Length: 364
Image (cartoon, rainbow, N blue to C red; front, side):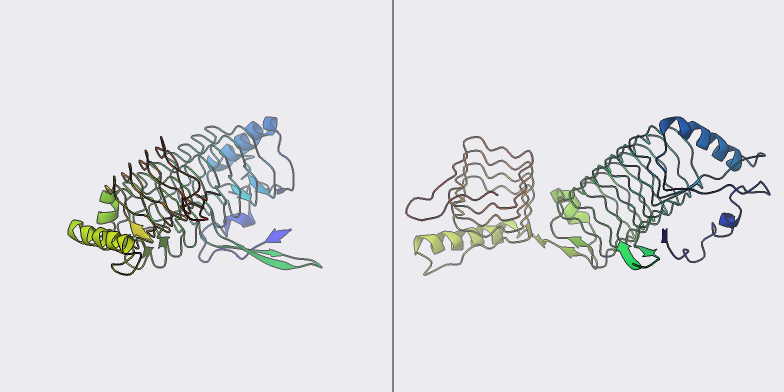
């Protein structure tokens, strides 16, 4: 069985000594069970009586239970305990888990549209691929969980909350504790993270358009490969965060491109190879430019115009090219391994062997 230390100054600690509340008889914890759909309504009915302080109420207290794939739409489990439970692929649309104890619980691939997790204990919770559109997590604790396994093979397991590839559009994460959380590949468009603790959070491939981060703690947060439109990138406060380099101003960009062209024309004897590695070039217009052999490793090229650009033998490894216009671009011999090409326009793109070399376009 997994146990954990109580959160410091946790107001729920005293309540756990009497799961019935207000002198009602304490009920046994449901542990290690597969919960059938027909049992959910009964569990919520008893829990609702607990919330309303009615006789014979029972504070729902489940541990290590399987609720995957169940329909919990609109149910109210505020202040309930679902420790280390599995809600994968469940439908929790409009459900309430206000101040609930959801320590180390899985919501992978679940529908959490408008689900209310205000003030919930979600330390170590997993939301990979979940739908969290307009969900509320303000004041929730989504930090590190530490789980102790007792017995002959005692172990300690640490887990960070994960929102990998989740849809969080319009979600309220104000004042949430998200230290170390993973948002890799997630859509955070329009999310409110005012005052959130985002120390050491990971945002590789995450979309952060129109995000509010006022007073958020971004110390050591990794935003170098986050997808942001140019306006969001310019107005975002990156204090303490790891971020992509700003795009050079237009005059400086022209100088870099001219020096790169000279580098090509003189067979690398003069000029300088263009290096845009980890540079934020979202929306940049590079249509028709000669960029053969240029470095774009981990560059942010979201919505960039690269129509007809010469990118032969260019290094585009792990570049973000989401919605970029690559129409008729020359990518022969280019290294595109790990590049994000979601919704990119690729009509007439030239790929394959680069004449006179052994280079092939690499995508995998």
